[in-house]
Length: 455
Length: 180
Image (cartoon, rainbow over the protein chains, first blue to last red):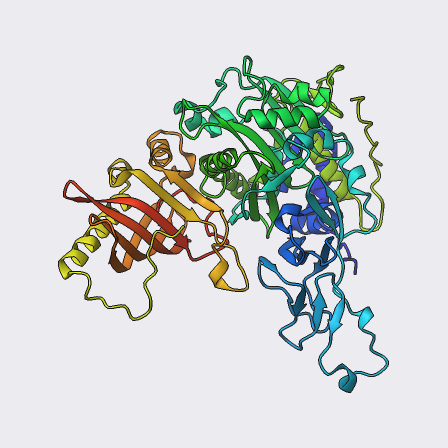
């Protein structure tokens, strides 16, 4: 059932203003906390994009399931008895009860607690109490299975979309896979989640977070100033801007690749992982990743990643940890936050534990860096809703004239330095395309598929 | 993983001397006072050098019994890393605690059980922590099952192990910038 788009006066005005301002590096502050923008996002962004559902390692065995959501729809993501992933709306087709109420579990079937309709974890309706007595030939079980949700996968990441017309995930990622491989392909075995995600409610708009993780290297020396004060970082505040910003034009995905001059190659990885990366990745990828200290990236709209070497006690050798996070809009100016630690499947157990401990100290709800980010973001969100803030544009002026580097091994639009705003303008341009495209219409700017550079 | 020896229902309370029970309770109340007054460096000294401090993650499952059946933690600190958290609060740059949270730790249902080692005790308590910040009238309320191992060191109690099971799977609060 498509939602009708009633005229949304303020939202339309904001988006028009943004359409004019964005090429000049201006974005209205108000988009970060607005009821109409929120409703339009649910309809035009989150009901059409590919949304992250789960990592395949969260449902490794037949019967395993997790409960996730897309645009407010509760979705069961299950590994069927057939070994494949199945995603369905968590709603009994009879009278709409939730058939699954746990976040994690293992079950071959789901039975509704209201009238007892029972579904296999593949979504098929298999049990209807008293069927022969209460239903006649008008009732056919095969018509009343759980509503399926379309899924697609890349390197262990399971995505879902509510829109049958959305392109394949591969096309949607549009070459960003080259960068994602740093997070997802440390060896042929890939990655797995170390543990269930931290989940909490953040008092922030999701867009602020997605932008930050699209390569905001600018904030680190100040927002995380305590880290410099306590001697945490391999870089200094002066050298922190060195590196690259890469994005896929028209797709919204972006990544910041921060470097520290003189850093040993692959600093923070155990030698076994360095060796398996050399087996798994291309020469071009290795040449970039070897020098990368901080890789912070975002898949449009709201799935982010960070790899960073971190020594829990300053002065000790750092360990490289990887966090993946989903900033799910959950009401205006609020998110439901899910944060995972990804570890290489076949890394030594001692490394995996060290990486996870570094993750819990730095990120997650009690993480020191996470705390300061959420503090800033919550205030940005609060301020964005004030009446005077409606008149304010933010400057996105860094790198306005930046030319892409001609020889960079990775795909997309890549510039230097690491601290710039080219990725953010691409992120918000893509968002704007979605927001201005009514339901049913295809997006006006058909994004060019960026050809992967020769490996 | 649990620090506590699991006592069954209806266990006799006669095993613990009233004086000892009183002493443990007073220790926990004074610890709460110190942390609520934000004397974090003093609070830090109440932990042993071999401290293991953990807040496990909880997941919502069909049966509550298996909600902790995994290796996820919100916090899993040694004394050194807990010390980093304390040090950070001592800098001017811990933005999440500027202005500082106001907390009130309510400790109750203190149950003391001897351990094999004669200078250690299993101490299980219920914890309720109120937290408010700035000019907000809203507050976070955290309920938890706290499982400590206390050790007598030079005539004083010290905390050798703290395992705080919060009574939520999705945890309240923009961030968890306070101590439990």
